Length: 105
Image (cartoon, rainbow, N blue to C red; front, side, top):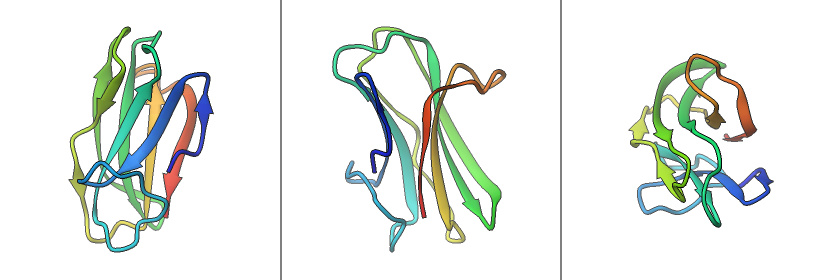
């Protein structure tokens, strides 16, 4: 599900087949994918976080370097997940969004 496209950057939540998801449905294993048509112009961090009733259950992340065109977080799963969020931040310490958050329920 691509909620926001800022310039040439896309942030989406994917399943194990690499397909974009619009809803959680029967899928219980997720990753966040950041991609750029040319190349990313800022160092950052792509994060995939799983939630249940507003409480974070688990999260995984990958550093994104200038010049990369794609980065996928490690896949995570939790049977109790009712919401998945993907973030593209400046850093884990700063948590400043580079583009808006993408989420599915």
